[in-house]
Image 1 (cartoon, rainbow, N blue to C red):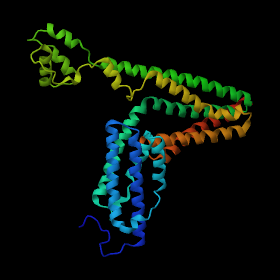
Image 2: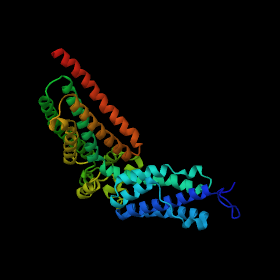
Image 3: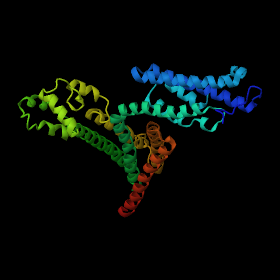
Image 4: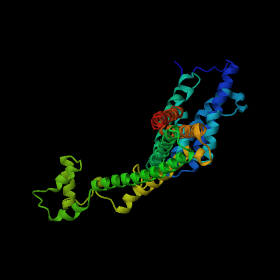
Length: 371
């Protein structure tokens, strides 16, 4: 079986083949440009990886160029997806672009197209994993404060919509609904900010308490070499008996090397630098993000009442505005997680509207009871 089944040198390609190959050629060029644009905004290893990906797309481009021959001179526009990716990569170069590129690589048609080589199809599958790895780096840098921001915005949207809709269903005046909405905004934002601060600080303190100290360096000289309890320290940290004994001998001065320093405490400034963008985030960063984004979400269902609307019209407008915002936050989370954005957006919408529907029914029941 041959590597490809494209037309031979004496076989004239069909017009449909030519159009498809021209589209592939345009898309490969566009994808290479995306990686080059992203590389300009990175440095070090990430930059080198992105340039390697651009080079791989260039090799794919040469394949379609050879098949097309003179027809390669006809320039086609890249797909809408690749044009959007190129626009975003050129102007932003963020983790969102990498997340979109990850999904694009995972949808390559080469696995089902006999005119693409097996190596090209395999390349695209590997590219998806490479981009996934790069996107994961970006997600890790964002995950602390971004997690607080997304959850804060979503909680603000859902909880305040439920509060406003429930109050509106009781039949109280618009002024009371507005006051309740503002109170819910402030109370929720302060609660979310304080909760995130305490949560992240506590997590960091737990991690700090779990790190090795330098006591093994100062106490080693006074230990009994025949009853060396230093071995227990390293076994407790996860070393095997043999590795722990060797490590203890290093600390006791039997060996003059530091053969495996992985479980020793590093200098504080090095430690802080390594954790600058870790998944835990910072307490203040999480608290401020959570407060601001909860408030930005919670203000949306209150907007109709701020601008003087009331009754059913205000409730409907609030629900529509919140629905649009929920779709947006769900799509963003879907993109960053590499999941289908439409599915995540609809899930967010369903959860938010479900909560609002429950409180609206309760509001109606409560209003009837009061009446």
